[in-house]
Image (cartoon, rainbow, N blue to C red; front, side, top):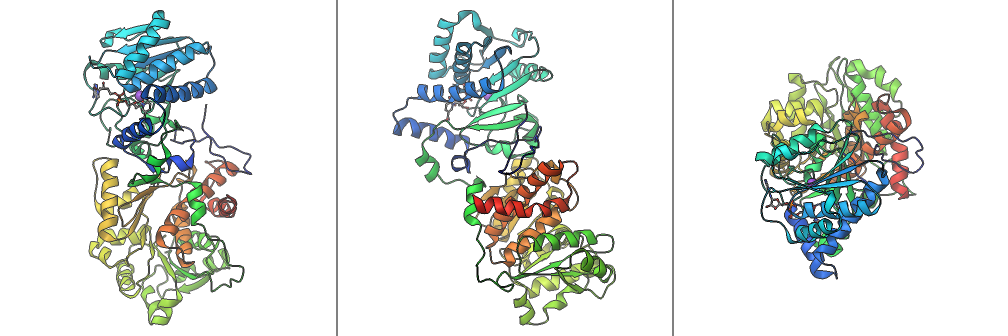
Length: 540
Ligand SMILES: NC(=O)C1=CN([C@@H]2O[C@H](COP(=O)(O)OP(=O)(O)OC[C@H]3O[C@@H](n4cnc5c(N)ncnc54)[C@H](O)[C@@H]3O)[C@@H](O)[C@H]2O)[C@@H](O)CC1
Ligand SMILES: [K+]
């Protein structure tokens, strides 16, 4: 069983494999709520709607049972491990519903506490009365059953109510479940047991699920690279939590979605001329790395900038003119690297001419390049896009960061981020650091990854859902720099350019993977597919 992301008009479907991916209803899951907020949404729904907590649990379990029934057949035996809280309550209901559908089910109760939630107790009682021969009790690791493969293990031990690391014999049960991974399928209900929704679960015992059926929302933990091997494929199941709570509750973390991106996208003016959509300048390339300059210039053009100029070392002149005839070229006096690009901005006229500068792809970190960057930052005051070696220069001369024009976009990958801002103990700490730095510098900082995180100067962080591992290849980042520079040059605000550009980049990558495969696609294919991505976003 594999998850696929598909777009209209794309016939080939590329499995995304073990990466986290969700089927979702965008309007409801755009916000990432904390465990406390999810609990409050639950309570709000029960208070506002004619629905009891037991009915809500039944609704959630019905969604899970329907998902399981869609993906498995009654020939596959189910082993459902229930804890004492409401996650375990879900487990009892799922067990009952699957038995009704003709599945072979055994439900196990882990006696990890004497305090059972009321809804768990009610549903356990119903189950024990109806199916007494289908229940086993677990008091210690030795009670773990011998399971015949292939089977489905449903993890309903702990949900979002977990408040500390699992220890003792319950941790032993978690390890026993994980020992069954090969040849069986592990499906976690709401969140893999042991995983904390809002904090790092590094080095603590967690169920390692193949699939997670998450209620209504993504949890922040699912977006963290450190958890990719724990949650497996995440499937968000709407359970009808109250839309008013969802709409009105403020959150720091968001996931961008197609509808949101569609509202950001601005159709072109029918009376437009090439001056309408700005003149972008890309300062890039050095000897041996001219490809980076070409890729960023091409991506910039294919994202709609009116004019694109490429500032490159002398050695790259022919390469650029031949590879991209639509771009204009300015060459540096140095044959192999860029050393005097600040001289383009001798007067206000040239500063006005370039609506946005993108700097960094293949730039190199020569001292002369660093000096030119410092002078450029003193002369140019519009938001710019800073990537790759330009970021490495900022990391080597940290005082330069204060000179970057407010509203600029930095696009580090994790190693560049660490060089710039230092290491973090885990990905939650890194996310906090990312957000703090965006606030303190008043810059937009995009941290590349499976779910690229985009931190804004107001403290909000947006995660981008598009993209695939085929994009983990040289040149993808150069393409992103070109896209972002293009959108800024066209007059999009930095935030709009950031959200739209990153989404487009990932979507074009998904389209390229669907067409050529994740393995065979190259960064040039991302550029080729930008047109189709635009058409998709426009047509929504
Ligand atoms: N919020 C919602 O919208 C809904 C939530 N439901 C379920 O309710 C779950 C949350 O339920 P609860 O708040 O009851 O919490 P859980 O079911 O996650 O479990 C909490 C239980 O574990 C114990 N516990 C906590 N940390 C522990 C540790 N480290 N070691 C051992 N025991 C520990 C607690 O004392 C309590 O008994 C969700 O994950 C979801 O599965 C669904 O039933 C319906 C709707
Ligand atoms: K669980």
